Structures are given as structure tokens and as C-alpha cells.
Image 1 (cartoon, rainbow, N blue to C red):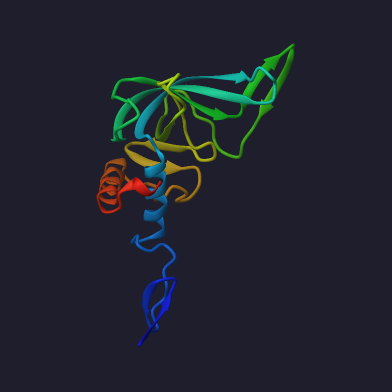
Image 2 (image 1 turned 180 degrees about the vertical axis):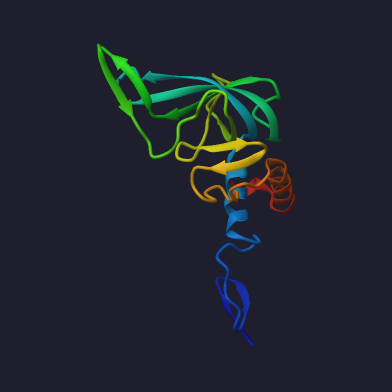
Length: 179
């Protein structure tokens, strides 16, 4: 004997998993980030520069990256291409005064390698992308290290090639058409 809830048959005595139909909450998070991204890449930070908006209400930092590998192709991104990622925050000098916006996440650092879930900024700037403004995910010796534990569904220290396989499996099992 079972019961029905929200149109899903649940056998009596079985817990309802809130990440259904995924095998884990981590898979659910990872697939959600994957579907929202125009591309997923491994890229090396080349340099950053902060900008103050014309109305002086926002500081953005543009970081130049060289794409090293692609885990999800799309958005016109290619290996060895230079792209710019814009994220809120940074420090600028305005009329002799330093202005700084700090977010509770590590900034990108030149020469380091990162996992980036890229969202195209617009057709007018095809090589400029947005990335998660709250989480910085560094790749060290081929393994992924997020600034927040499993925030993207990526366990700390997981190989990025294993991560690529997980992304491929999730994409095959759950098409992104619902996002």
C-alpha cells in the first residue's frame, strides 16, 4: 500500500527525496549550473581590471582568461581563445579617492586556473561573459576546489576530467530544455 503526493507514487515507509530524479543533491546542483551556463570551461587568469560604472553606482572587475579546456561547448568559446569574465566587486580610483567593493568570496588571481560556468553577456560583446559572482572555483593540479563546499555540486578535490564525465552523464540523462 502506498500514498500519492503531488502526482508521484511513493511506497509506504519510503522517504521522499527532495532531489528526485537526481541521484544526489550534488548532481541536482551541478546539472542546474550546467543548464544555466552557455559554456563550461577550464581557463587561466591572465589579468584583471576594475571599472566604475558611469553613474558611479557599481564596480565591476573584468578578468581576462585564456581557455584551456572545454567541458560544455557553446556560446562561441574555443580552446586558446581569450575571453573576459565580468563579476561585481573590485577597487577603483575616482577623483583621487579609492573606492572598493568586497564580496565574501576569493577574487581571481593572475596565473591561476579556474572552472567557469559562463553566461553570455550579450550579442554586442560576444567574448564577454558573466560567471557566478559568489563562488570562485580554482583548479589545482587537475582537481577542483570551490570557495564553498559543494556549492556547485562539485566535491572538493574531484578531478576536473571526472567532473566533465559527470556533466556529460547528467546532460544525457536530463536534457536542459526546462531551463
